[in-house]
Image 1 (tube, rainbow, N blue to C red):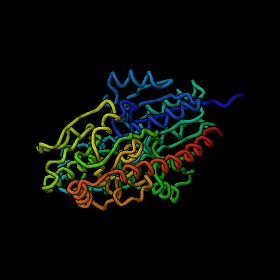
Image 2 (cartoon, one colour):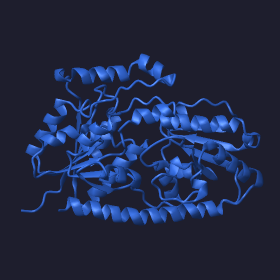
Image 3 (cartoon, rainbow, N blue to C red):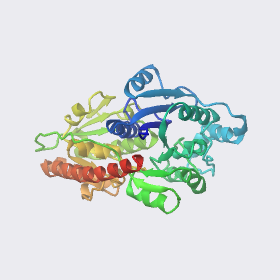
Length: 400
């Protein structure tokens, strides 16, 4: 009997449109697996039940892209009274007001607070009615459904991030994020339900390996080479692209606030793209707000130099890898290059102030950016070599 290559993806995040790093990550991974003859069943689970994750265009795009597509709302589980209470509290205006003052409240989600009976029942139905051989759970907080699967199904958790004490990390950086956060004990409880845990970068792989009984492999973000070949002789403009999550908004706003204080950079053109455009405040005449863009190649042809101004964050910074894949000159903070493998100093500034000082020097001296262009290309080629090894490692486990 031939081995089934039907793969079920359970995700709280849609694959379309690819306007945020997590969506790009999910889309690229499962498109790759499609090329390896896997039939992709994509289940989009709206954890909050408000329909926000899937409008008509998203539904149509995902239905056309995947072999099977389902959209599911959570059930109102009465036995989850405390979980529902935690969700209401963590999303309340009062909690946001307290958090904005830097006051920490020790409230964490339990690992299963966002996983409803409706999801467990639907996944069971899918596995009984289709020849599913592997189930991918995107994010550990949906891992409970793995406990109800037949033993012959290979169970994978694609982590994206470390969620243990995530709120503490955010509070220390005065960022109020409403996304999932839990205790180390609860996160490990979720991870131990899988046969395989996928970490998105090396540091997180080591962290999970020290704690979980499941096998852990590293699989970073999938990008293809799209090098732009043009001359970068001088610096007249920079570009930033980001989604509108709180970390990006804070980082881009901090960058612009520092630009205001840097006299020499008052005339450099700054292009801001992505949904972060609608969340920032800036009246500088040299800042051009592009909003959402349809063609990344056009954006990466627009400026002379690109910036990843991340001041806080976990996981891997897809914005940096994307810039590498286009081979464009890049400046980044150290946090913005975590997991990319770059050791260049201009990809690893310890803070935004030093990054902007370097940008100021480049602009004043009209330094050639050719070496920065070559550095991006070299970083991407090295990254891609490691990625190919990681993909082969994943395929070996899925084709067992």
